Image (cartoon, rainbow, N blue to C red):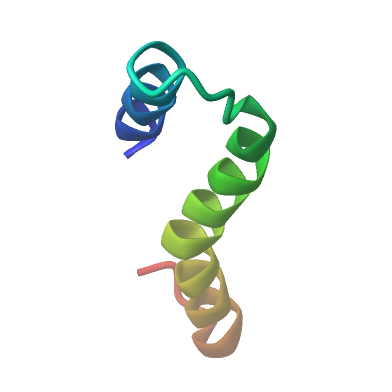
Length: 50
């Protein structure tokens, strides 16, 4: 998923000639929270690291 964000950034920079690098930190936070936040919530709620 992180590689897809990087490839999308390269396409925007070199093909579309727009700089989207200011969005990359927000997108990375979104990806990390999408994948790891539900697991963390379930771990805290159940007490089992599934």
